[in-house]
Length: 484
Image (cartoon, rainbow, N blue to C red):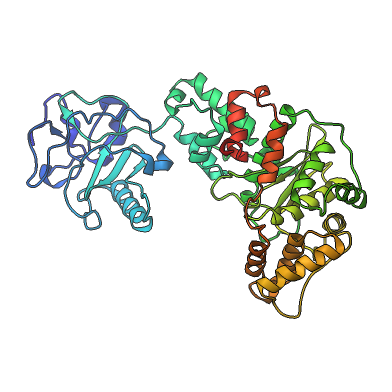
């Protein structure tokens, strides 16, 4: 290999790079045996190995910053340095860091079958695999000499922040797609003033104190950790719920600021049920949402949550002295969203969310917690007009359940879908009751639409012009309004 005299450091071992980085600038890993080491650089057009294509011209430093924790998004940079099956190639003559990187890369590619990452980066060393080629090289933000060609990448100036956000439950893809402005490019964070703007947007939206974002050597702290009441769920990791709660709070803040809301009124369950039944045959999700808004209680549904965040049925919280309800269930039938909405209204009517947010992961009619019992009693009186628990000696067929639900619904003015979902929960210990319930909802033609009535009511009442572009983008993308 012909090494340019002005670049004698091109054959340094990996362990030599740490002390030479600032002084010697851009380098490529090499070894004392030029022909045996992956990652050596070549002049464009000469010095190729047997069976190896020359590195493509123009592959100097890629012009896109790459998130260290999101390596699968790195664009193609051309061929690497040594041919062969990446599952069989092992670097020779490298210290532990190079071995660890290659092992990490091969492990990722063996476990991830769909869109696996092609590069792994650590401490300035890049291990990459592409088209059967495994290569190692050192990355730097400085340009290589014009006659040198090597796959070279640099890390994002946001990489350290993305890493800490990911550990707090907010993956980089979620932050980029929903939290940061649509025009944001990570390269802007090279300027400290721009980085501060990004941190302010993240702090405001995700409820993470600015002071915590600025301390790069400490884990991030979510502001709402002390104000959330996680009842009964001793086996649930609270850290998976905090991102959901933080996003719900920000969504509700934006809704309160962008909607003209009437004075708050709280009605007991019997009074509200009677009011709805004056114009509707049953109490169901759509009229229930409409009446919540008319009482001054905004209702939202969280469609887009971070990967790994725990979805929950309902959340009641106070924003600027006003109670709000956030639903986050992913079930397809609107019937499954009616109960958590009525239940959260019960928490509000009983004053449970005045000093802390109330979180409900799923329907629980057998709860022992006094606050949950009060909220359940309110929901039962509102939806069913009486304490109701529908069950049978054995699991009914979907057809039989649908017929029974229609008969009971007409007799007691209970929406048949509410009978079905109540039955599905009560019979959950006796087999596939949820599958039967969903099949019965399909027979009743109430199996699709999900939380669309919640989104429709929200869209009718918002003045999005009151929000900044960044806040409008966040609200629309998280609630699903952008898809309507």
